[in-house]
Length: 149
Ligand SMILES: C[S@@+](CC[C@H](N)C(=O)[O-])C[C@H]1O[C@@H](n2cnc3c(N)ncnc32)[C@H](O)[C@@H]1O
Picture (cartoon, rainbow, N blue to C red):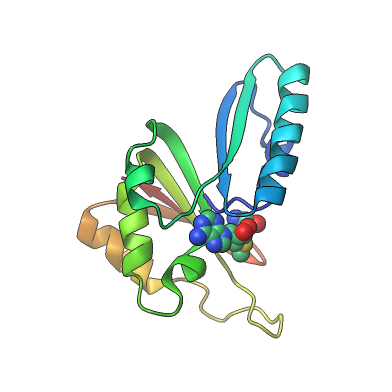
């Protein structure tokens, strides 16, 4: 969701079998991804992928989506919340029909420096309140919350 060009890293995932839906608002990026997915399908029998324009604010459409194992919501909560609390991100995470949702945040400040406290307490509190479990994965420039719903 809000995938940008991230799906170009699919070959690095090392998976033999994968069905992948990619969504973003940018038509240009979606067109490039569909071309890439066709290439991957020709090269790998185990891969199927489709990219579509989808507004992450279309909550009803998201809730109606086929169930999936895992949804990536990488560096998207700021786009969704627009500095007004975290209710929008929470609604999206709740409605995504996935067993796991992986939410990531940049750990670099606007000036490019690393953050002293990269964790996002709000998402930890949200998980506790909704009885979701989570694990964190920290890298030099990004922190990932692997949330099990
Ligand atoms: C910060 S980038 C993150 C891209 C990618 N997830 C990554 O980690 O590299 C935010 C992305 O959200 C997309 N976007 C912005 N508003 C959106 C919306 N309402 N619905 C879906 N995607 C949106 C942008 O086109 C952009 O690709």
